[in-house]
Each structure stands twice: as structure tokens, then as C-alpha cells.
Length: 452
Image (cartoon, rainbow, N blue to C red; front, side):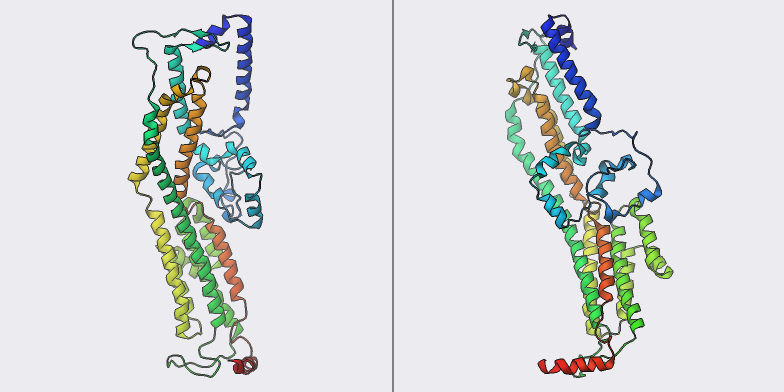
């Protein structure tokens, strides 16, 4: 305000320069509504209230990034609501775009749409406000230079009116410690995300293993080659089986496999996001009795896994082969328990809190040390954007770690479940041992036996 008053009562050149500056600020102000990089309260004027049909959008069909549909609820633009838009499954097309030489330009063009930057907007505004305060106070008590290069005396004078500042050496001394804290925080969070993704990778692999073995071994209770028994257990040679019974029993294996992973996904997801979809899917694919048994269970994935064990037990198959199938179920228990461990046990809170406090204090005091470092710029003004940039960068690293720490709401678990269900249905539809007529079985055995 003091600078504006000074220029209003100066010569014409100064007034011209002032009007130019005011025009530039007016242009920036007009463009501000479209630049939401640091917006903490996005306007809801263009956002329509969400309906129940919109809330039940298929999560596996969502694209990465914030929604571009103006009818999307305001809570989906950033923060918790935007996490479901980060569940990305890459194909060859996405990898080509990921490696594109234009990726730097594309990333910069979406700078102001970044959910990470929007999440740390309040913190950046606060640290930048401290920088503005330090800059304005030091101008008032230390003098300033107008746009034409003329130096002016301090506006506030007195023994108590001193320039505020801190030595930069104090910040450079503790910077390595802050860097180590942030690096460990980020690495630990990424490790948790990677571990959760590997657990779901095991689910994908062993659901296919389970259904493949069940389909191939169905009806094979003995040795089809010479009629000998396994481990002395009474069994018979492979023979023609009832196709309808086979289709039903293997269909139960596929269905209970899907029910387990879908129940596991619901177990790891927020209730308000997935409960309605979960109930609808279970009731549409399972029989009313099966669906009610799983839905009413206290621990739904365990109940689904129990039903899968029962379905395996009903298969006409030698008990040793059933044991091989049940080994996959033990792996499912391990992946379920591992995911529950990640969900219930965050990185120790005292570590996360100390890192956040250390970082916040370091950035809040940083403007006091930067003022003297930008003496070559006009009235040290470049310390303000420098503080904002450093704040965005460091707060952004801490925000990345926080977003990765709980991995399940950013993993495409719904897509995994849909794929598992489709793959299992396809595998169990293939012809397995013993499905053909007895004559065909014997002819195949006779043909292959000499080479064995």
C-alpha cells in the first residue's frame, strides 16, 4: 500500500509504470479461476450433485486423473474422492504414451490439475504468506527501491524496527537429515504399495492355477495308464462323466474363487464406496443361499474361502490332487492376512508426525534465511516464488508418501476381480480329462502309452 501511494504522487513515468503493473496483475487475476494448482476450496458452481447411479460407476472402467465430466461431484476433484481415479492398469497403448518424448510437456500442461499440489495447497499458502510477511516487514524497516531504481528510506523507524533474518547455514546443516527422513518415508510407503500389489499378483496367479488344475484333473480319481492306485487308496480308472454335473461342479469352483477375491476387495475397501456394489454383484452371481451366507458372515473373505474348500471337496478327484488344489487356498489366506496387516498397521505414527513437524518448521522458517540470499533481485522479491516452489516440492514429496502408505484405495482391485472372474470362467469351460466318451479315452491311452 505504501508503494502504491508513493507512485500515485510521483511523476508521469512512474504512473505509467504503475498502471502497467496494475494491468499485469489484472490479467493474472482474471486467469486465476482457471489455475487451481494451489486451490484448497474448488468452486462447486459447475458441479451437479451426484446421484446413486453415478456413485455406482464401475471402478475398473475409470481412467487415471481427475474427472473431466462437469457432473462429477466436487469431492472427486482432489483428496480422498480422487483416489479411485488413480487405479490404473496399463496396456501396450498406455506404455507407449508413458514413454512418449512429449511426456514432459504433457506433465507440465496438467500442472494445475495435480491432485498432489491441490492437497498441499493450504501448507504452501501458509509458508508463502510467511515469506510475504518477511519481505514486506524488511522493506518497511530497511528501506526499498522503486521501479526506477531510486532508493528510499525506511517507512518504519525506531530501535525496535530491525530487519528479520536467520543464517542459511543452520538450514543447510539440517537439510541432509530432512532429506533422509523424507527418503525413508517415501521408500517405506512405496514398499507397502509394492507389497500389496504383489499380494494381488499372487491372487491372480493362484486363482488361475486352482481352476486350471481342477479342470484338468476333474474325474481323474486313478491312474489312466495302467489302473494302479495312488498310495493304496481305492480308485478307478478315468471314465466318461456326466457333462452337466461337471459343468456345475467346476462352475462352483470358478464362482467361489471369484466370490473370495471380490469379498477380499470389499474387505479392504471403504464401506461407503463399495458396500452397495458388493451386495449387488454377490446377489446377481450367487444363489440366494450362497450370497446370504457370505454377506452375513462377520469375516466375509474367510466364509468365501470356506465355501471354496467345500466346492473342492465335492470334486470327483483323488485326494492327493485335492491337496494340491487346497495349497492354493493356503496362499490365499497368506495374501489376505498380509493385506490386513498393511491396512491395520501404518508406518509408526511417531515417525510420520516427526517428519511432518520437522518439514513444516523447516519450511516456515526458511523465508527468514532466504531474504538475504536474493539481494540481487528487486527488493529481494524473488524469495517469495522461491519459497513457494520449495514448499510445493518438499510438501509434495511428503504428500506422495502419505498417499502411497495405504495402497488399497489406489490399486485397481475391482479390475483384478473382474479379470479373475472372467479367466476362471473361461478355464473351467475347457474340456478336461475324462470328459470324452470311454472309447475315446481308451483310444488316446493306447496311442500315447508306447511313448510313455
